[in-house]
Amino acid sequence: MRIINFKITKEDDSKRICDFLQNFGISSSLLKKLKRTENGITKNGEFARAIDLISEGDILAVKIDDKGKMPEKLETDRVSAVYSDEDILVLNKPAFMPVHESRNHRGDTLANAAACYMNSNNSFRAVYRLDRDTSGLVLIAKNELAASKLAGKIKKDYYAVCSGIFEGKGTIDLPIKRMGDSIIKRGVFEDGEKAVTHWESVKTDGENTLLKINLETGRTHQIRVHFSHIGAPLLGDTLYNGDTDKIDRQALHCKTIYFTHPITGKDMVIDCDFPSDIKGLI
Image (tube, rainbow, N blue to C red; front, side):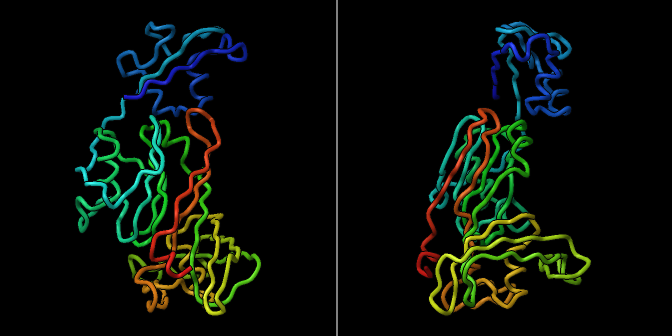
């Protein structure tokens, strides 16, 4: 249960409650749920209708009941919480851990670890997902409002070690789609979906390069596909012909995320360290 309070300012005087809440970012579907929730919307401690007017100085409150089916808990010795408050949780996902449960993964996912950290029966709402073998930060919304306001609005700094020498900065703009009958593998095709990857060289040893990468689009396996296509696959990436001599999974890590907090409006920057296997490459 999340209760969010708003103190009404002169700017919002005489507005309808529904207009104020939708302007804040509450969707039509969530507004309907609030109407059905007992005391889902209150004004100055009293039940209020969505069509009621608000005045300067009023205290408006909404009660978000976000109970759902949360996966069984997983002991969190492999997963660290980097940040947590009433609305969001940021976990540092290790490599080889899926984000969501599936037929082949029960009880060993990031969703299970989140259940332990959140210690509730709230729904699991990962704002975005990382591939199973990609490590790094995953942002989890603790309620429906936070999830809807964050969706598609997270900037991520990825770091990858790829084969070949890169200097300066560049952009790869090549369309991607599923390869043949494969359920997993993607490739570059003229009739694929637009995919744009921006890269910046951080350091090179004359054979491989550490890159900082930002995505303009978010296609499945986008970074891995793009660099493999130009002849510079990520080290360890067996699916896309990466060299596995020095690392046993794709050398890809989501190190820093940038976003606006969905409730407070504060600009957030959250960072984590490189895992030991990528540190070894660097």
